[in-house]
Structures are given as structure tokens and as C-alpha cells.
Length: 215
Image (tube, helix red, strand yellow):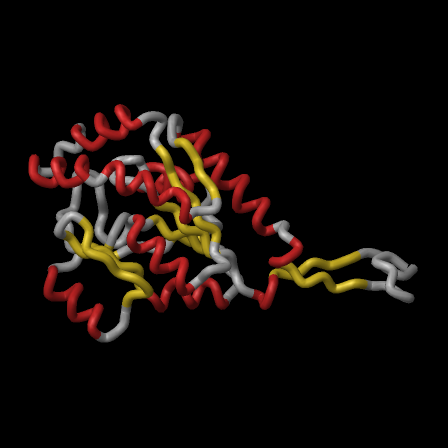
């Protein structure tokens, strides 16, 4: 008996690029760590940075921690998809790992700062850009001040940039409020699922006759 139906294949065989960013202190890293543990099939791009390793962070898992000299050397030879200087530290996304995963049809999540996200949007306009918001401005300020690993000057800089960072939300497609980690992660996964179902992201291979979807 003939098999009737349709088969939907990813557009061009490429994976989905998801960019998660938001203001400093909103909890991007915490949400991504939760996603990593709950959804291991997703590919998580590990950024490089020159900032100091915070308590609980692991080199090669949370970030690639580089010296300023090593970061600049890698930047000069084009190793980064994007890079930015944020609060006196450099951050960058390794190019090769992201492009390799996408070309293999794997979905990739980038957890990066707002500057970096806007640069990635220029290169990958087809990506999915999600802005993570705090439940309130007061809560965001509380989280920033609560970072024991940051110096008083770093905290001052972060607080001074809050309004400017929050204003960047207009450049994103989606917003998720990080009141509870589990809820924020569930909303992000719902966005990814919906985006993967878009007609524009899929090639439909039809078994049909006379222009009908089903024969």
C-alpha cells in the first residue's frame, strides 16, 4: 500500500541559531546552565572571555578564560564570530564551533551580551533572538549588587548601563521574564519549538498528484 503523507525537512539542512541575551545580572548564565542540564541535545556555544573566573565556574564549560593578550591574538586571526568589550573585559564567540554545528543541522544556543547579539544579528538575520528580562528593575539592581566576585567599580558600571541595556529590547523578536529559572527555560524551549515549525524554515517534500498535498 502506498505511503501517503508529507515529510518536512529542515531548510537547507541547517540547524537553528538561538541567541539569548539581556542586561547584566539578569541570569543568562543560570538559565543556560539549567537548559544545558535539561536539554542536552541542544548545542551550547561556549564564549571566550578575559574576565576572571567566578566561584563555581569551570574553564571550558562556562567560558574559555583567556588572558587579554591571547584573546587579542585570536581576534586578529579571525577566530571569533563576534566580539565585544564589556565593562573592561573582552568577550567573543568562537566561529568554527558555531558554523560547524549549524552546517550539521544541529541547533545552537548563544548566551552573549547585547553588543555581541546585535553583531550576530547582522551575520545571521535568520536567527532567533530572545531578550531575557528581570521581573523588575529593582530586582535586577539587587542581583547586580549581590555579585560578590565583582568589584565596586564593576558594579557601578553595570548599574549605570541598566537603562541603556533595557532599551535594546526593540532589536529582539522575543522576550522572556526570568522570575523563576524553570519557567524561563520552559518559555525558551517553547519559542524554539515554535520557530522550528515555521513554514519558512522548512522544505516540504510532498507525495502528491495533481497538486494535492495528499494523494
